[in-house]
Length: 399
Image (cartoon, rainbow, N blue to C red; front, side, top):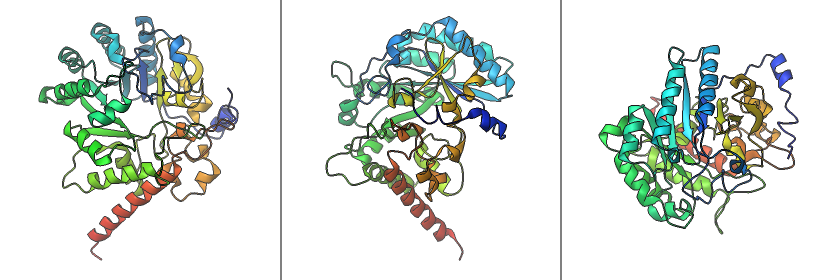
């Protein structure tokens, strides 16, 4: 499937001739295992448009990861980067086994010796996270993020095994281990996909119970062809209503209980600062995916749009990471306002919203130059945050 924009409408050569320069890659998400031991019903890898995982090796080989390590180290050296991030991902990365993960991390550390600092992270569903694995990850200074969608009934409604059994009990066991003081330094935080049928405060309290240093609240991946679920009888912006409830509880707490990336970013952006989230703002995205076969791809949330949406045709064996920066789909994530639709340009919240998550802008007939399918929710949430912050600033003013 070919889309009009950016694949057929963004001229990267003209951008470069005009003086634009791409932002170097700062993070590589490495798919160490293509399969998963859960069957989450909203997963963009297994349940949405792109099913390319079926044609790839289930487990990464040493030949592939060594090539990825070389490409990352050469990129860090070429751009004089003080650090790069490697995110071990899947599928479920822990299915690869401790021995493989240990060798892989050692090889990446060796490739970066004398070049740059390497921050290694892992995103896991937590069901296989035991004490021996945590000892390995802590010994290699790997920061661990765990996916959890709230209390047991909410989590197990969506995040379950193929036979229907829920995952909450196993994740809770893993989080009790990860929350111990000896592992606190490698506890990265929790990732939660929003389900608006779940009580937002009950969900937030469950997440807080695990003392996460940070929380990512993610809108379910959706687009104009496959819109997000909206419960019957809900208002025009149910995701905003859910997030506003959490924001008021989080923002109004007597002390800072945790970081919530989306809410932190929107608060900073309404005050004129910068954001770090793909869900808001205009900061350039500097992330690439390395698949188990060595393919270099765009961020894999694009698998929710159409088959091949992540594909660049590049591999770590034949191509540098710089080559991917010249790919239209990558440039589109780095050119800020130039990537936005006329509707977004006319919006007063353009610089704060940034068009929303790129994957959520997709329309089959024309590509990604559209407002987010969550536009109404984002605008309502921004207005609420702006109102709370401005009111508090006014109270602090001596006048």
